[in-house]
Length: 468
Image (cartoon, rainbow, N blue to C red; front, side, top):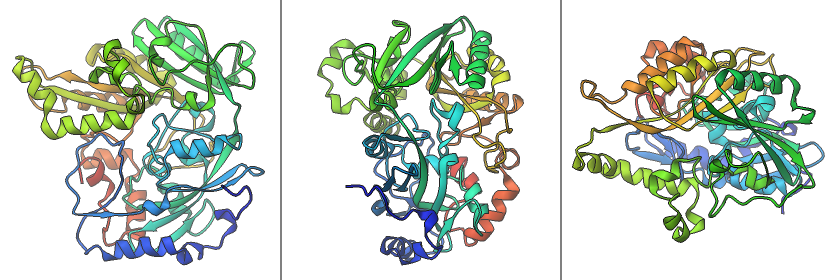
């Protein structure tokens, strides 16, 4: 039973984390790892898609998994950093509330989404997950557990923690804002002729928070090709005007976008509409084949099951071996999420269709929730609407370009040219100088010096580019 009224982190003194037995155990666990050994968080699941060297030591913070407090009156929750969004949303929905931004995949953790960024269809009005955090208890490289808030002595770490990828410390507990939710979400799928018309429609919805007189609570889109784009508008509703759809079994959500102009999902089914088929990536495993799908256990129609298959492929190089046996060239993994200003979306998609050619791709508008705040390791221009573009597949490595990373480097260069940013959960090829210019190099160095002066955690560049 989650207490509806209990102390929040913002009501606690900064000494509270030091007397929490779990926090003491976490600090002791870090202290027990010999100096000089790389430290990595021990997790059962991962949503990272970059190669990493084996870790000699893992830090167990599994006791910080679970929702501790839901304060309905103030719409706040205190949540362990290792809590998955699946568990978090399942708990808050029982109180008629949801987190302000729920990333698309069930096993993404709250701490992971904050330190590694996250996005979803509410981001055009609520920003990213870190923007709804009001306080964090963080285990730093010095072995201290500190309470960081926007206005205390650790405000620098509070604002510098997002996009630090565990290189400054790990969030043990977080206090977050929640918002009221309805039992259902009504969907409208708007077909767009091209990227220009889609950009115009997005701009109008972001400005009005509505379309044709109806409120829009969620907004994302799918690009099936240069002349085939579907924007999906979600609106909270207490009373569905049709039987809610079920995309957790035989039916496939993304295929419905071109088949029906309207739809209704339960609140939780809406949150995980992309997870069942990992957007559309389940087709790579045959899970969309009707014959295979009828015998595929429903409990394994989810992203973490597919991720395990990807891990096996990486370990044994299955896909490349099959390609070689068939006389096909090896393939380059192009698994990325990038953000460009809405005004440059048409340019990026034109480049992408011509130079990369993956389809479908996901688009999701976002805007910083509070224009007066600055998040130095992943800055957006205040008041500017950006669009996340997500694409997850492989492309052949042609003769004459045998090195891996050719297409990924092209994408990095184009995103930089368009004043955009690239998320760092997947492969990155930036030089140190490029990286520091894009991801708050000087501010990061100051935070690293203060909160991890001995380098207990690999630095951000080493983790995200170097594979530490």
